[in-house]
Length: 513
Image 1 (spheres, rainbow, N blue to C red):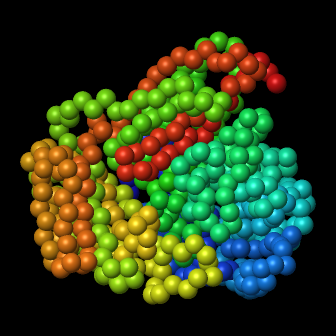
Image 2 (image 1 turned 135 degrees about the horizontal axis):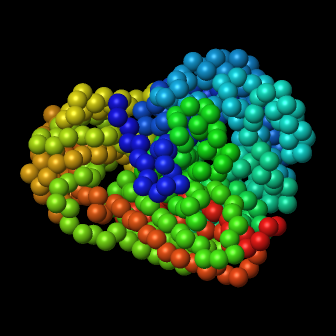
Image 3 (image 1 turned 60 degrees about the horizontal axis):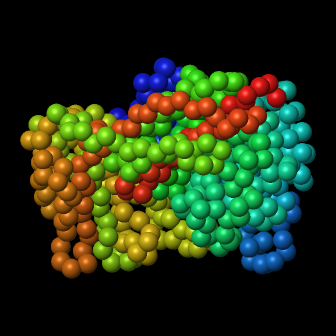
């Protein structure tokens, strides 16, 4: 397998690659669907690192609704019974240089907001979950750190109202929380007007719980995404990815990137985002009484709509790809399968071949069984996709779809091929025996659709080709700042396919604080 792992030309990221992970997702080890073994099989299809999270405790859980209290309590007890096996599986699938795992559990709180606890290991105690306050939790984690086991406590679905499991900025500390999970299937907590609004049963987002509000308060934290998926499918496309800049794909490499806030949040596509201020990478806190030399380097997973530079919550620069013609093709050819009748299963057997060109990397964009309420039932297995690259020209892919449950919910399955070639290069696809053949010259003009049979049969889409010139943005500028004691900068990226990314901020103090 050749997963797409991209570097940046910015000096601040020399020797690093952008790795994709999902460190907050669930399965039946507490409450949810599918086994932890299925979860890690799914994770390895499209991620570089992952943690499968168990729901562990809720010290201030309301008595009502009673059915919610009951299934949470059953889930917590089940995780206690499963904890030895969770550790065993987490450790067994870890492989430095190939796939990194971390052990985790979730600590719920109305008062302090939910936190996921991570160990820099595949083994660790569940006992900290019994903490009755955030400060008590931190004391336990400090004791573990002194004994040699480092831990993180990362807030998630931050945008819910404080006191209703949203973040509590008054009790936030960066000690164990260098980053916050700003994005998940709950929505995006960047601001109250950010894309991906909160539509979960838990309610809307509140301005005072958003990331921008916390930054205005002077809090320092980076951004990540994760799915919070509940059907054993880490990285289910479109719900959130934790992207990190690391010098190696090891626990040390991933952990050090999280600690240093060299992280960014992405919805699903492997969008490469690199920023530097005065030569420092995202997540840095620096001093400067003069101009700020800002550099931005973005390589999209598809055609970029715009890249914005945000300073103190306001957009101060916005740009799009130059769109100059490419002499040869070095870009992305994407194929999607799905559609058809809602709830009717279609099993897909796909063969892809690039004629007169070469596949340089593969970027799977796969969905799991995307249920909102973990108590809902689902049908079938939770691990049902597989892909294999045969050589530089050929790939086989199998999966399942059951239609899109609403006209606003994407339940299709997609593979993006990073390809080099020219106008005459041809993508040949066989989809359940239906053959489609199109040249890059044709696909640069637009997408092509097909079907496996009659009306309401499974649909096929070969997307518009995305050359490098449509996916790349590089920008350098000087900024004098606002004249205040501190400014913070981050980058927001939007692609035409409605996939986003947000870099972690960089903080610039005009004097030592």
